[in-house]
Amino acid sequence: MKNNEKKIAVFPGSFDPFTRGHESIVNRALSLFDEIVIAIGANALKDGFFTLENRKQMIRDVFKGIDMVKVSHYEGLTVDFCRKNNALFLLRGIRTAADFEYERAIAQLNKAMAPEIESVMLLTTPEMTPINSTIVRDIIRNGGDASKFLPSSININNYR
Image: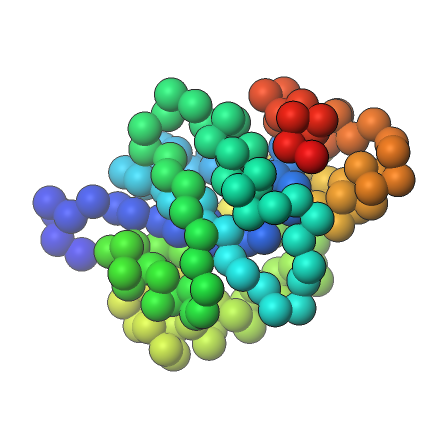
């Protein structure tokens, strides 16, 4: 990487919904990169609860006024999306040992496919460790109050 190149990171995920844990990872990474692209990936194994547009709007609302955070979406390989966006870093959050094993395997395969792209993994802060999009989505789906697990700028009723 040359000194004059922007340090662009892609933070990929389904973000269904975008949680306080996701927000924490991005906020902590802001000092590490010049730009962070939060990229909503199409996952053939997951049906979205919130529409793609609603998820994008949630994230835009969370980072309103922070120009170095961009929101996008993609299909296909994450490393291909990184290349298209001149991103040399893949940002991931790790909550548990199981997350680490899963992310390690993906990072190593990504490195084999795209040696120029580095995976950067941030450990979640202890209070964010139990926050999981699948569980938060189930709380919302079943009419529970998930507000304590979502960024303060997200009123879930605005995205349904």
